[in-house]
Length: 142
Ligand code: AMP
Image: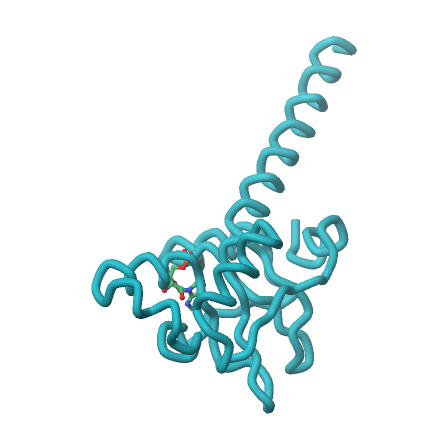
């Protein structure tokens, strides 16, 4: 299964945020959309990614003052990305090696979707269930 198949099911929508938005606005957006990370987009395109984990770490080290800081201060600027032609298996390796749970999909230099570790697990479960059904019908027919 490829990333293109995952996006066909879940859609290409990506919730993004400006690097100038405050961490308080980021938290409101994460809660509103029920997500764990947002892609940070500046005037010239993708500049980073920020996840709930960044907020938790900064809250621990800097306290509540982080809420008024810009997202640019806590985001990760070096973004690990994938393409639609990558396989879900290779993405799960990428996520494990880089210890990230969200990977934006880039196609022709543009943001074309985002895949979370939840999407990877759901896809793998569906694949395993389909394989199990095939095996059961093979055994019953045989
Ligand atoms: P996550 O596991 O996705 O919640 O993110 C854990 C840490 O990795 C946070 O510091 C994120 O900013 C960072 N991160 C998340 N996704 C990516 C990504 N695709 N590329 C680079 N860093 C990321």
